[in-house]
Length: 220
Image 1 (cartoon, rainbow, N blue to C red):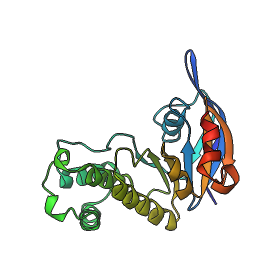
Image 2 (cartoon, one colour):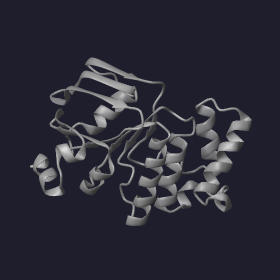
Image 3 (tube, rainbow, N blue to C red):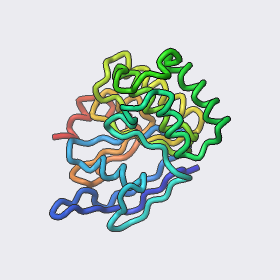
C-alpha cells in the first residue's frame, strides 16, 4: 500500500531549477533514503512533500498530514521539554488526556523524566534530536519526513536515532530520510538519489549501490 505518491514534481527558484520532474512512491513500512550532494534538491523536495512550498508542476499526495523533522532542531528552545511536548501536541489536535499519556511515554523512553522542566536549549544534542523526533510523530502520522536527523550527532546518538526510525517503520509508517552520511544509506530499505534536481537512481541499496565505493560515483 502506497502512503505517498510524487508525480513529475518540479520547482524553480529562478534561475535555479531546484527539482526537475521527480516521481516516486513510498510504501507502508518503507524507509527511503534520499541522498544527493549539497544543492541536489533534497530539502526543496521534502518541503514540497510536507506542503510547506507548492510545486510549480506535478502533484504530491500523502496519506494524511506528514510528520516532519527539519535539519535544525524542530523545537522551541526557550521552552521546556514539557512545554514543547504540549505545544506540538496541541498543534496536532491531541486531547488533554492524550497529551498527558504521550508526554509520559516520550519522557520515559528518552530518559527525560527528570528534565521535564528544563529548557530545551540546555539539553545535549542527542536529547534534543530524540525529542525532535518524538514530537514529529506525536500524532502517529502515516508518513514521516526526516531531513538529516543525525546531523551533528555522535556515533552512539546516531545509532539510537536509527533504532527509533526502524521502530516507527515496523509500525507501518512510511519514512523518508535525507542524509549526507553514506553509511546510513544501508540502513534504508530503498534509496532515491538526486543530482541537480533530477532523480538519477531508485531501488534497494543492493540494486543502487552494493557498497560505499559504488555509491560514491553518484556524487562525482
